[in-house]
Length: 424
Image 1 (cartoon, helix red, strand yellow):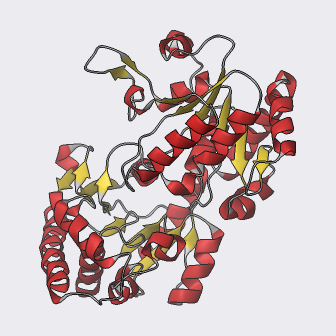
Image 2 (image 1 turned 60 degrees about the vertical axis):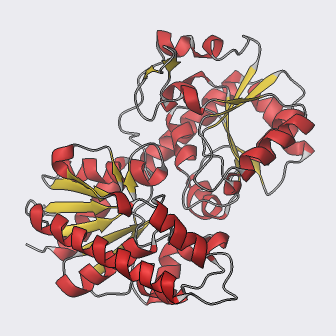
């Protein structure tokens, strides 16, 4: 396939920062686009990308007070309708963001926009409307990258903004193309919008294995207070209800061996009640939990304000004995692929997308189907006691990841999309 002429492509999201899945996957797209000869620019409420290539607009962040107030008013209770004041607040913020987006397109002379989940999950209604209105008015080509569609999240089911969600999450416009991360989403977009979508799965750089553990990694366990004979069970996820962390707590409690349950990420995106629930559940089952988000850097190693070592997430994978991924629902499963990339055994719940898009590819894991059983506990202990089996499974998984979820999947998908939008 011939390469498209060099393009100037603008990524749009609520944030491009930290280790959330959208930020990480967006950057993988950006890396591949730059490798094809295109320039990439960023628009978001929080941006940690090169400033000369970025436009940071505070009101584009979903956590901005004005945005949070709108979300609080329209989700969770639709019995009273939507007050006119809320509609006015949505319209006013939409207009300001649309003006900022027009400036972004003009100032960087953009050929195309790539909204990253901003036309997908309705966490920022005015931003989605602003992108949709700009697309409809300007005709600029848009490739919407979808991670979490609104009908996949129960917390958005009850609302007073059905009109907004129908218009922009996602929109059915002729110049808006759709890329999603699993086959179920593709089918739903076709059925609900009458529009085609291309599956471009989340990926890891399996073509380039991670560097081997070094002295810093070797000192991680002791630095975090784990004994040599203590099982290091890692949950590399945010503390939100859909991650199913109570199942991991139960598994650790039932293994019958000295173990520490380590959670690498913090709570906050969806409140703190679930963290309190996990703390209480762990106390009831006498499971020791290490809340390690303050010791894990977003990307690179460093030191904190007390001079303590901060580790990369890769260090955490390399040092652990078992990765647990008991999610109830996922758009794809970034942390699962990361565990495979670092050649670690994985305990995983058979959430729907895993069953449809990942499991059939030949991966070998300790699997739970909705709840922890005695058979699952026995299998977990058997795997942990068999180093040869762990080596066989992790090598099998890495090979499957290389075949199906390497950066080649992104390259091929983006080349195909761009060739259709910009032929010749």
